Image 1 (tube, rainbow, N blue to C red):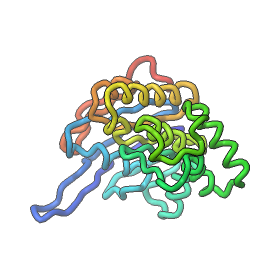
Image 2 (cartoon, helix red, strand yellow):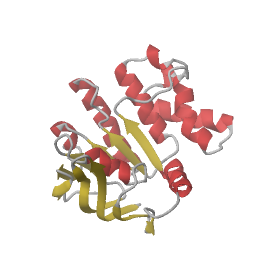
Image 3 (cartoon, helix red, strand yellow):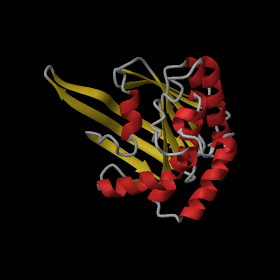
Image 4 (cartoon, one colour):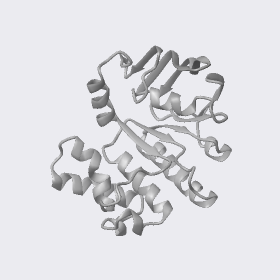
Length: 231
């Protein structure tokens, strides 16, 4: 897996004129990188994350995924790429309250047209991986906050994506639960070789990355890669 962005810019019009949420950013992210994106509020972190696979349309610049340009393809093709290759973990978990744990995790497989028996098998396996095999029939309200986030991780993982995009995945958690979730993400990255791109305010969370990116005012001000990167 290779993700490359060149001179990526997202511009918004405001009553005070045009503002660049991200400005002329270039990066190369390789398979099994654990990328952390930090910076102050309003620095463009989430805009950058959501621009990578078309959830936000960039104003200019180019994006290449697995050596194919994707910033100029149709919305339906971008949706297909996300459906097949991308997992998402959000700060608010985004679980469907009336579905059980296993049903929530089965959603990405349903979108791929996989039969129900195989959906159930895969979802059960990934729930065991995240330590929730005894919670498969619980509703979200019957789970702790940490368990809900692990369900969200299982859902992001169930279709074996190339990349997981995580937007402040520990933002709603206390320090102990945050470390638990970060350890799970690290385990996924190391054991399954899945690339993780994570927006975070937390210096502790940022420390999990082998590639660290810092943004200020929409611009990349620092990029640091550990020598022990898995690239």
